[in-house]
Length: 275
Ligand SMILES: C[S@@+](CC[C@H](N)C(=O)[O-])C[C@H]1O[C@@H](n2cnc3c(N)ncnc32)[C@H](O)[C@@H]1O
Ligand SMILES: [Zn+2]
Image 1 (cartoon, protein in one colour):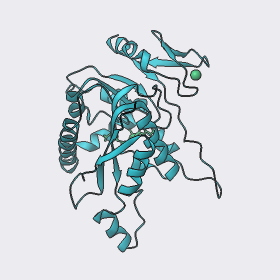
Image 2 (cartoon, helix red, strand yellow):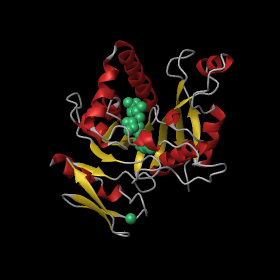
Image 3 (cartoon, protein in one colour):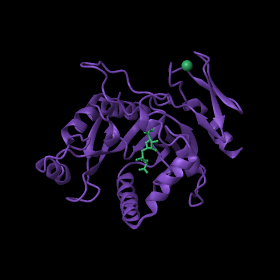
């Protein structure tokens, strides 16, 4: 019940993932006031994910897409298996480090009234994120992941949860103060998907976006290339800077998760002031 009330509290921020129309929140579903699509609410979570990939011109036959990845953790049992894997020592060290990098970077920006975590997965980063916002919105393509996160006893605040595709975020432009997007871009196989991701994150965020990416020029990727192993799904710092610029923001920092050792970087993209 509390979750449904929380969803109503952000009704004015929601937009239809198909037509961008305003959405009205009922007790069992959410309805688009323009195209009349109806989105169910399941266990307090609005199912607003428009699963699929951004429209992209196909040059030579069908391009690879992340469609199957979006569908992987719909089931809570699959999500549980995935999240329990993060309880190994090496993963705990990573998560502790990720919390500390996020805490440090979020402190460099004004506190957010609303912060979107997309994809939130099983809420692994929520204990760090919730301290920096009045309202945390956890969102993921997979319902199973959000249900797993909703059961976390460590959380101090009630988050709003909704399924969403990062390619069609069901929020109005500038709906939230900021968005955090960790560990998604390096799963996206095409430039079109990575570009669409950055554009959508910046569209819905009023002030800033923090997004991880796998640095093409990191030691880790360079070593793979030298050993003639296939490259990771990477981006260069200048590509991220260019996409930030296109989305009305500047790339102001891009620290590595672990300098020299990890290929993951945190891009901090701050929106330019308009008017
Ligand atoms: C590696 S997990 C990262 C989760 C979280 N950010 C973290 O660091 O723990 C990636 C998540 O992305 C979700 N996902 C995959 N494609 C997506 C898409 N297009 N839009 C939103 N979520 C997506 C998956 O369901 C999965 O939970
Ligand atoms: Zn609609």
